[in-house]
Image (tube, rainbow, N blue to C red):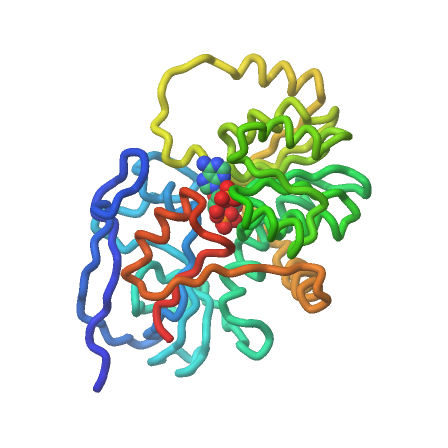
Length: 339
Ligand code: NAP
């Protein structure tokens, strides 16, 4: 029997602070048949990423917000189940940006065919996809690691951070990870091969970080902000580079007036000749072919390892996403939407 309905998750309300279950709504709608030049996709895997928290806000950002009552956006791996497009055939597996739903129409624009024989298709959402590319481009283009330098990265067991530390080591630098909890720290040190790891939940975290970086910090790849940044900042060496990739510790914080720390920050930017440079990965899109080549080679040779945290069922996506913002994921968070 033909599938006739699509289950999708829409933004029900804009969260104030932490998202809650009532900010999401599950809906069932009819599937629309593809027109000329269109495809019908069945979503197999949905990527859950920290940036989605920003899309839930109305505020101006680097990308348009998701409108209330619209499908939550997100990267997906999908199977073409009907094609009226000359470039795609039924059965093709593609990387798409179809959002939190079971089925989607596409005109083919922005789709990338995946070859399941080359790599597990989920890696197109993680180590061989946007997060892996973010690590590659941000670290190499802005961080510019040199042999012997100390590179520190937080959220070190996650999709971006795990790649940052391993690429830093490939470039001859010393990698120090920051992660939450003993299990993640053990994974970062033993499985990913970082030179040292520190648990940001420990009471003496700042002292442990200082001990783990006896020569100071040359590159801090900023993924989290908040108290982790406070501990890192005094350890930055002259001419340190700080690629500002993400600030996940701040995504749920509602801004309040407080002590103005900007003058002190700017003083140190001057005195220590710091480079603090924000970026959004798509800025470096021309580096993607080099990334696919290098990262595929590093995975094949065992120099880069990765971990995926795959949860089952679209309806679990809101809960899993809320957990991501609190560190409950362990590795690249992916929802298996269909077998
Ligand atoms: P991830 O590391 O797989 O998962 C998020 C991790 O952040 C959690 O597991 C948790 O790890 C950590 N975390 C959450 N809340 C925290 C807090 N309050 N304090 C400290 N750590 C906290 O996520 P990801 O996809 O790799 O993303 C990492 C960062 O990169 C995010 O900030 C994201 O927005 C950013 N990003 C930026 C770009 C770009 O183009 N600029 C692209 C992709 C991602 P622990 O439990 O270990 O603390």
